[in-house]
Length: 358
Figure (cartoon, rainbow, N blue to C red):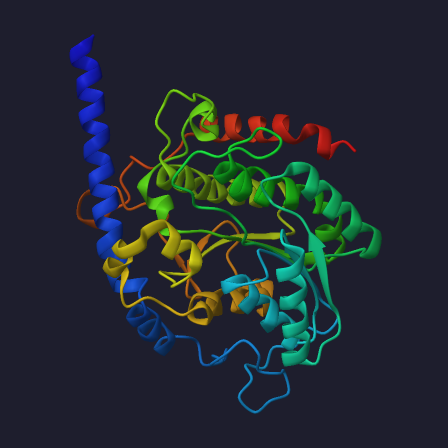
């Protein structure tokens, strides 16, 4: 019995080493700033590239996108890539809702975006995505004001080195990224997304961390065993893998809405600085917030026929979701079974049922 356990552990460590190493090799080529500049050169000339988020839709250097009449909701919108995407949507004429947890920072971002884009249709929704009740309250407020939502960008989340719980007793990394910030939010907004028609889309902002693992058991994901050492990087990776599975499942269940995951590459953001410290030098040259967000802003405005629902994108192009096999092949180490996904969806539903029924 001990020999079998040892063998399983060795195989798991081997799979982990292969997937992590191969993603690093892939990332150095594609996820750095150098990779971004190389990818831009191969973009379809029918969809120009802007040099910043605040270029107005009628400016000579604009990309030609017009989002007048669109309603866009973005979480984590007061800084970094969230603010870049919010600024872009506002510059294109959309009505934009900034879902943020800090009221002062949210108002400052709102005022800055309005000033830069001359768009006064910028609104704040206060909610911490690790707090399910706050998401419920914010969505109800939004639903009272809007009949439709054309684009939802689930960008907010946390990457912590120590286990922390929300006021509701849930582990913050798991809840902010997947349970609340992706599943509950997008599920509650299904009526508004459906009302927007076939051009509606949901973008889950993901990370290369998903390449490290498959989605684990629910108890492991939610870190319910306090005796086990908390690994913030894996908590983050589990949540990001869960977002991929959620997009795939909802593509099947709600095919008239486009569901995609978007990897921004390696971006020099506060969350990276806090989590990696000096180790971030191994990710250099890192992208600016705009370079990380640019591919996602394209996904916000491009006609849905140009998007592959359920796919994982980096810089406007679908990517492989697994890098765990020999010589950069997919392998099986990071793949989940349909039963695994069924169990994940059932647990998400159970955890959020009181908010979905009211």
